[in-house]
Image 1 (tube, rainbow, N blue to C red):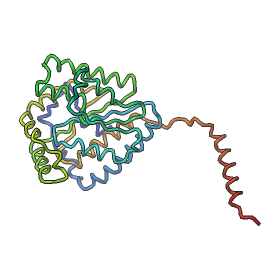
Image 2 (image 1 turned 90 degrees about the vertical axis):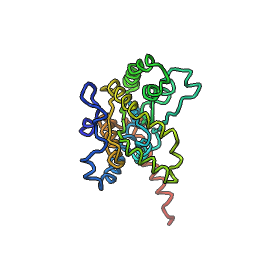
Image 3 (image 1 turned 90 degrees about the horizontal axis):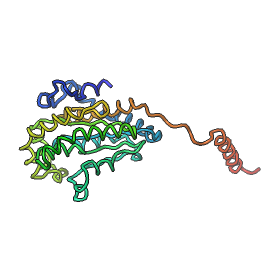
Image 4 (image 1 turned 120 degrees about the vertical axis):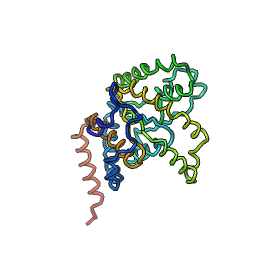
Length: 286
C-alpha cells in the first residue's frame, strides 16, 4: 500500500496541516493520464467490492471530511463509477434533527454503518461533532474533548464486531482554490444550488477549522481507522489518489468468493439433462 502510506497522517509526528501541500507536484506531471488511470482503478474497486459483497464476511466504511468546495461530492462520484449499486451506499450527514439531538451524538451514525459485505461512504460524519461543534461552540469544551476517545472506541467496535475496515480522508485545499470554486458555483448555473451565504461566513473560521482538523487527526488517526491527507487543489489527481487508496485497502482485505451452496455435480447433471431436452425439442422432424 505504497500510495496509502505516503498520505497517511501519522500522529505524534511533525505533520502540521498548515505545512502540508495542497497540490501533488509529482502527479501533476502526469495530469494527462490521471483520468485514464482513474477509470482503471475505479474498475478494480468495482471488482473487489463485488467480491466483498458476495463474501459477506467484512465491510468497508470510507469517511470524507473537508472544508466546503474541497470536492467530497466529486470524489465520491468518480470513485463509485465502477461499483455495483448492490451493497454500496452513500450517507450525507446534515444538521442533526431534533430527534437526533435528543440522543447521543453517535446514534444516527451507528444506524448507517455497513453490514458485512457492504461498502458505505460517509459524506461528513460523526467528526462534525468535534469540528463544527468545536468551532461554533455548540457544546462546551468539556464535552467535545471527551468525544475523541469515544470515537476511537466506536471505530474499534466496528472493527472487532463486524470486521469493518474504516479509512478516513481529509481533502486538503488552499483558501484561494476554495474561493475560485465558490466563484465557479456562482457563474455555472448547474452549480448555483450549491452556493450559500454561509459558505462565505464559514471562511472567516478557516484558521479555527484547521486547528480543529489538526487535533482531530492527531487524536483519531489509529491503526484500525487511519486518516489520509489528500492534496485537493487539483481535482483529477485528488480523485486518483483517493481511488488508489480505496483500491489498495480493498486488496489488503483479501475478499474472496464463497464456496457454492449448491451441489455443483447435481446442478451440472440437471444442466446437461435440460440441454439435451432443449436440443430434442429443437430437432426438426424427419
